Amino acid sequence: GGADTDVPISFTNRGTSNDGLRLSLSNVNVPPGWSVALCFADGCYGSGPVDRWHPPGDGETALIRFSIPAGAKAGDSGSATLSGFALRDIDFTVNVSVTITVQ
Image (cartoon, rainbow, N blue to C red; front, side, top):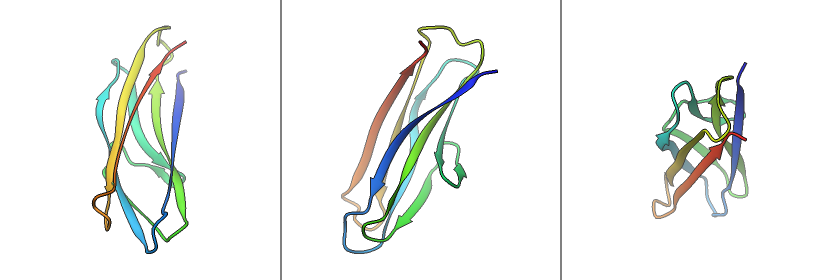
């Protein structure tokens, strides 16, 4: 079978009040048969969007999960961008691009 490759990205609310992030995957570019999902400890949410709320000092890790089929060849690569914004402090944005390559 194939394999899942998780790219972890951690977030912490450094503000003084509860706030949330609205996160989604964009610019997904993967070979046929691959898939990408936005995952957290409680499950996966496709490409989102998903809202994640945290009190001050709290946070969590998002995973960009690349599901790669067994037939993938060395050099095959896929990419996605995790993007989003804070729901209360709307000036805070997230934009992280990730590329993985089969070895």
